[in-house]
Image 1 (cartoon, rainbow, N blue to C red):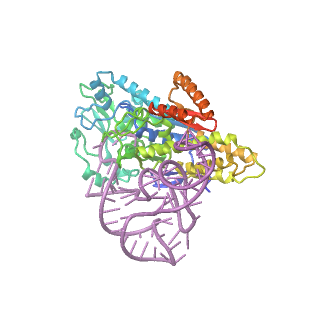
Image 2 (cartoon, rainbow, N blue to C red):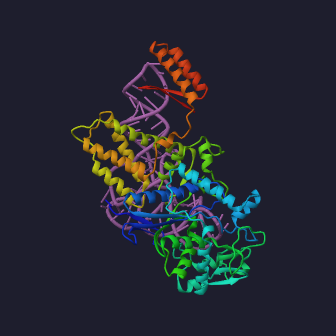
Length: 490
RNA sequence: GGUCGGUUGGCCGAGUGGUUAGGCACCGGUCUGCAAAACCGUGCACGGCGGUUCGAAUCCGCCACUGACCUCCA
C-alpha cells in the first residue's frame, strides 16, 4: 500500500511522510542513558526502538548519521540541596571517582546493547567531553537576552521566551497551568520563575564534578548537553530527534527553547518518542524502584522472574509491541515471546530444505508489499512480525509438501526473510545459543543417548524410559526426534 | 489539580466504519513404542450507557476504571 515511510511526529501529533533535509541522508539524534546505574528493560526498549529505525533507514539506503549520547554529568538530583549531580552522589557512596562510575556503567551499557544486537551509533558523544560547546551555548543565550545569572548559576528565562515563542509546542503544556502547578523546589529562590531551568549550575564545595567558567566553577544543566552535541555533529537543524516519552517534558521542550534562541530554529523536524514498559500496569523505572536489569533477565535472578530469558527474547518481546504503546511485563508474555521467536527463527532453517516446484501457492510480491507497508507505517514491527508468521506457516506447509513454490519465488522469499528478520528486526539465531556449551557434559550425554538408542532399537522401552526419567530428575530433558534424540538442561 | 493517553478473547498485543491480525496457552489432529518436541487445524474479543450510520469494536458525547508527564527517569 504505502511505499513511502511515514513516521509519527510528536510535534504535529500526526503521522507524516518522512522527507530528509538532504536527500538520502538522515541526521538522527537519540537521548542515550545516564550512566549511574545498570541498564534495565526500559533502556532496552528505547535502544531497540531507535535501533529499528536506524536499521530500517539504512535498509532503505539512507546514509544515516546516528548520534546517541552518554550523559555522564549534569543531572540535578531533586533532593540534593547542594546541587550534587547523580553521578557524583553515587560516587561518594561507593567511594569511587565519578568518572570511574560513569565508565563502569558505560561499559555495562555497551555490553548489554551488544547482547541485544543493538547496533553502535555513528557517534556516541559524552556530555563531559563537550563542556566547552555547552558553555558557548550559555554565552549565546545570555547575549541574546534569554538567560540571566544568579549567584554563579545561569538560568533560562522561560517567560521571556514564551512572549515571543511557544514554550510547550512539543509537549502541549500550557505555560499558565505550569506556573500554577509547578512544585516549589529547593534552590528556586535563585530563579525568577519556577519554570526557568539551569543552563549552568554553580558547584557546591563538596561537588566533585566541576569545570571552570566565567560564571562559576560548576557544571552544565542537563538539557544543554543534547542541544550542544546534536548541533555540533548534525547541524543547527537535523532530521529526527528521538527519546523516551518521559523525556518529552521538560527535557525536549527545553532543548527546543535553547536551540530556538541560540540557533534560530527548532533543532529537529521530526520528534519520535518510545513509550514505557510497565510492570503490573505501572511504569518500570528508577522512581518506583520496580525495574529489572538486563543482567537479571539473563540470569533469572530476580523475584519477579520465573526463569532466565535470553537477550534475543527481550528484543523480540519489545518488537512485538508497537513502540508508541505501553508494553506490560509478565513472565507469561516473555515465555510466549520466547516460543514464538524460536518458531520464527526456525523458519530460516526450514526454508532451506524446501524443494521448488513448477507452480507457486505463495504470493511473494504480496508478502514483500506487506512487509514494507508495515514498516512504512510508523515502524509497525508487530504487523511485520504477523506477516512473517504467516510466511512461517506457509514455509512449514511447503516443507511438508502441502504447498508449492517455484524456484524463483523461493529465492525471493529467502531474501525477504533474511532482510526483514535479520537486518531490519535485528534478530540473530546464533545468539540464541549464548549459553556456553559444556563440552564434558555434551560428550557424556552423547554417550548416554547412543546407549539409549541401542536399547530402544532392541525394544527395551523399560530401560529407555528409565534413562529418560532419571535424566529428567537431574534436570535434563530428552526429546526423541526423527533424527535421533536431543537434550537440554532445564 | 493541569495536560495527554489507554481500556481488545485465558495472557501478550495489532488494526479497521462492513471482510481471519499475529504470538502464547487451550482444544482437536499428524508424527511417535509411549511421552515430550515439532508441524497442521479450530474456537473464544473489542470497558459501560447513549448518539451518528444501511451498518461501529472502529466516528461523536457522557460515565467508569487506569496510566504517563507536571521532580531525575528510556
